Length: 213
Ligand code: B1M
Image (cartoon, rainbow, N blue to C red):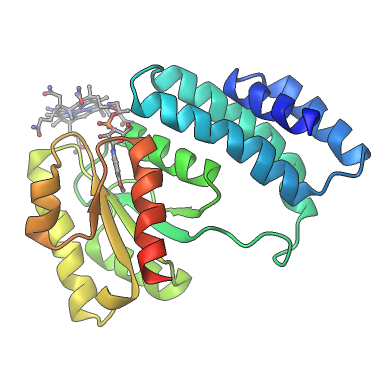
């Protein structure tokens, strides 16, 4: 459908006003909100995620595209009921205890939301207990942790440990990331996945939930 590719294109170009007017026109033409989200907004964000992963675009372009996507989501979200659209998965995400860096984590959260995941962002300086409480409260499929300091990396391991001690480790997949994090570190502390950037985080999360489905 022409209007869906126009909508995706408006997200890719970061044109929030165009996203708004195209969304309203498409709704007036009778296109279902869930179709507009999946085949318009998310399709556009997927292109952004792929380009970001390949270093073809950078943080500002991603933020502008995410803002445009949000302009459409704000119109569509109140119109969809739970039965219209099953979220891809639910993730609780946060920057670990002692760490105040949140630019990369926010980017990951936006990209995941753009890919259709329900994201519960716990913010920064998130203690292991807070992650565990959030898992109990929200029952997510995934827990995502971000760390930018070598000194806060151990908090990731402590959080996994506490999930284990609370009997919750088997109920969630854990993905970690951040500048000092490596795949080897993820394996060492028993995380299920690692992503070097926000685009890859989408792929890793999707792959992790597929393996549990
Ligand atoms: Co800080 N800082 N900082 N800092 N800071 C770094 C991280 C540092 C490398 C700078 C340096 O010395 N070269 C260094 C860490 C050294 C180390 O530990 N090895 C450092 C330091 C030392 C500090 C302080 C200790 C400085 C001080 O006070 N003496 C202090 C610590 C405060 C604290 O956290 N307790 C501090 C403070 C700050 C600011 C507050 C000033 C600010 C943060 C503002 C904010 O976030 N709101 C800040 C910033 C901006 C940086 C740098 C310059 C940039 C970080 C950033 O936003 N990058 C950083 C230097 C650097 O990285 N070049 C630095 C852009 C962002 C898009 O990338 O966060 O890597 P990134 O996220 C990527 C990937 O890593 C990945 O995807 C993202 C998008 O592609 N990713 C995930 C991230 N999380 C993920 C989670 C996933 C998957 C992928 O799954 C869940």
